[in-house]
Length: 403
Ligand code: GLA
Image (cartoon, rainbow, N blue to C red; front, top):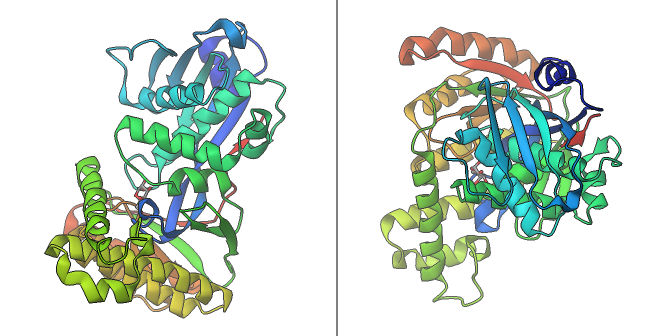
């Protein structure tokens, strides 16, 4: 990314010390469509991120109606909103993320202050690597820093604490902003963007937000992300539909055990005993979520035991379940997974994120990375007409105030 401070000066002129905040994207290793069912996920933060370079406005935090002026590097566009005012009729879609973040932070009782900022990012948009969560988290940090310019550079937690917030609460607020934009997403993306740790995946219990950092043995295994170049379309409708189907499953299974609140509470035994009570599609959706939760916990055990082969098998099983039971894969993603699984030294491969397009994540021995790249380049474009993007990624730190 360009020198953001210089970009800021170029666009807004020289008016005061520039602060820079950063919210990373993420890749999910395992635990897909489990977060909104109160289950388990194991994502890691990436070294691609959304950044804002900002200068707070002069008016005091009590002025009431903070105005935020943004220049988007990616969209080459300037836009502005005033908190408390109706959405500007010509507001570009990207503006809705910081706007909704401002709304939820104000509702939480934070005294917000306006700012002007350059917004930049290198998280591929629409690839399932959570560019939207990265934008929400970075925007939230921008508001926290603008309202309290005394907050020093450092991890997001310092800025959150200065406002009496925990980073867990901040993740929830960013999730609420996502809901207001229109996708009823779970907590995973915002949580890992805030809590990521270098060299570690995060094992998160999405019900109580307790988590463990899981070291990735980088000398033994690489995490490879392959972008299918299939743009995700109609994601919102299909995603929200999956969520409703899970809720329907809960409603029906609760008749057999009143303590069931989410699919997280349904054991495989209870599901097997009563699955006939579920309509066929709902049954398959529930089976995915229930088995996926056990796969995440088993993956954590396998990682702790150093059994990466087993971890890889669980990744494969996750993909098959997403493809057959949850029906969120696409032929292009299945092809990438099939190619990867045919390469010696690949431990496992699956679609990552919501599905319907976007990326796969592959776990491979370091010596398998080049053969994997060659195998994908040899077949994928020829068979799909799409140009894949392949990169090896490392687990990065969570959101920070860089300057
Ligand atoms: C999207 C959502 C997440 C999660 C995944 C699927 O990324 O934002 O909350 O539900 O899909 O696992």
